[in-house]
Image (cartoon, rainbow, N blue to C red; front, side, top):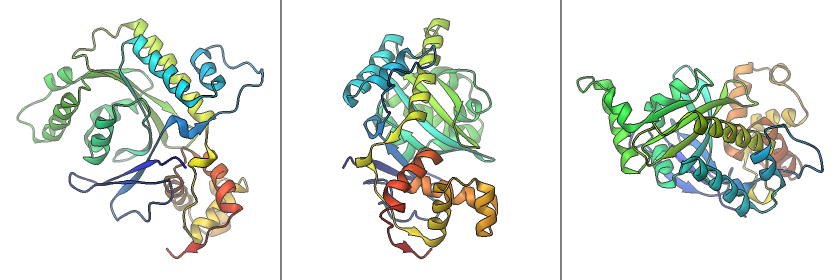
Amino acid sequence: MRRVAAVIVGAGAGASQHRSGPPGQRGRDAPGRIAVPVCEAADLRVEPRSGMALSPSSGLLGALVDEPCSRRREAIVREALRAMGFEWLAYLTMSVRPGGPVPESVLATWSNRAWMARYLEEPWWPVDRRLVQAVRTTLPLRWSVASQIAQLDPDLERDVRWREMLADMDAHDVRSGVLWSLPTSEPHEVAIISFSSPARSFEWMDDAVLGRAMVCAASLQEWVCRATPASDAIAAPSLSATQRRVLQRLCDGHGDKKIAAELGMTTHNVDYHLRALRRRFGARNRVQLAQMATLHFIDSGPQAVDP
């Protein structure tokens, strides 16, 4: 079985720890912490096209769908990145909340792994101003460490943590890039797709580079949406009785309102349980959650545990 890392991140520095293990076998989350599933592209599978045409912009997407070898799929994306001038790519799903975006999952295959681990463990995402800007628009956001530092006021206390994050990025050679916010199949959730480079300026990212990066981001997003977790990357967690009831109705095809009505709870509570279940199973969306539950929960029926 492939092992998928989970980074436990807290609300501030010093409140984190790192564990490794299959999704759903990490135990209960400690209060005030978020378990973020970190998966690899090799954990995801997409059925071949069987002769059916994809969208007109399916060059990279078609290559990913048609390539059966996971290492070759990884190489295809890496070659595309370097052809554009980028070194790394990070894919994060984030829930959009009043206090700011919160990570739900990470696809780390093409990322700067040292920086990604640091980003989640510190954690830096609560102070990352790029995320707040990105979720407000679908336009590309070009950035560089140098340009961000130039905008800071050294006398403002609120800029201290942001400045520390920028210095940490520079220390990990992540110095410039562009990122997008794209919608997912889940309500109040977006995918953040970030291209980055060790180059100190973003001036080299002209319209041609941005256009190619946008096609790459859209293709990767479509591939992830089509993908399902490989069966050997799935493990069934122990669930509470309420989680089992919610999950059973999700697998029956019920929407949030119907689940809430049948279980006598609010749609907000249903959404809360579904997000918790997605983290425990390492699912990227509710479709994957239902597929994984059908394979490893509905059939095998792991024993429920008390909340």
